[in-house]
Image (spheres, rainbow, N blue to C red):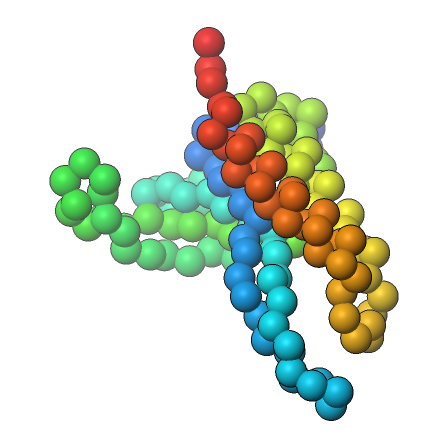
Length: 155
């Protein structure tokens, strides 16, 4: 368990360098009663840094996975290497619950993400099809988190 000061540090680091997304993709399901397509939503919590130290520190305390990737810089399209720390769904929610009291910039996004994760426990294991009202709520939260990201303004 991370200490209170470690959680506060992680929140500050994440507030500046982190990203919260509800990812949407079209999925296909093949069941014995037929094939159908549906929108699938997943929570993804990430932080990227060119130095591996903070990323490894976060993984050691909060879990998740690390990957090294090559990306393009926006200002000159040159390449650079970066380290990504990635948490999904329940692990992401656990981290967001821990840091929420300390978040400033990403607080609203974290609240929306936690509301999204609450819809995951509403589906019974082995159920054949996701109820329409849950799918609609997830679609609504997908739009809300995108709007919250656009609305961030620091005075």
